[in-house]
Image 1 (cartoon, one colour):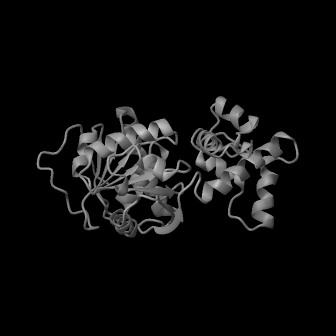
Image 2 (cartoon, one colour):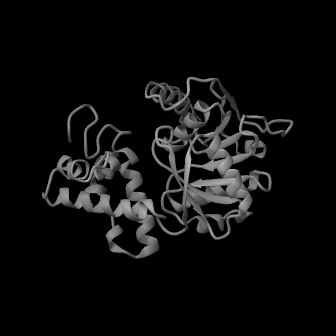
Image 3 (tube, rainbow, N blue to C red):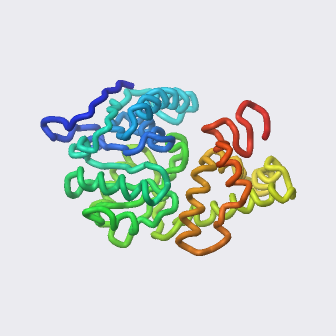
Length: 302
């Protein structure tokens, strides 16, 4: 993997040929999901532009992409190479040369609205804007952009370089051209689209967030330990992971943010985050990324 850093718009404004035929894709947001998406693109041979407002976050992302590439290849989930070039930037102006943009900032309406507005102002008309959202309705987000017909929702699972299926949300104003561009991009990334309709939480999180919240309530009530809640799902239902291990992988902070989005938009108190989830987030125990959540990732169960 080669990397390049820039803070200024490229001079010629020309799209590059990256192997999927449409030019260089970009990812906005260098957090957990944005970094993993960059890993997927680079590992599939696509040069990708990764943008974040934080230089420090970009430095961490560069190292994390290298680590994740090694991990994915050890598991046989990415080809051996050659890698695409990873370009790091703090400038939204760089998006003027992007052929497609995946927005992957924090799952709060405020953060996504700010990012999507900046993306929409920077890209060329007709450029695909894919908001990687886990709960906010796509049409609501599209309303904050200059061209809602270019906006589509993508809910990549974490980590996207290991999980092929992508929940794709077509908003009521999403155009055919955007859907076609997304199909080409997902094909180049070797991902499988599952297209669903718009609405809070779509299909996956409309169901999953309630399950996680109720599972956490059962632990708080002393009904069962986290491990045994999960074993019911893996041992009895044949799920690959239980809801609380899944929550740790997603990030408990993201779980709480997503529950808030769902509660705000549905008014359903089943989506009010339980006290145990809130307590863990306040304590900084987010799951895998911090080393502790419902489980400890030093090898000992929490």
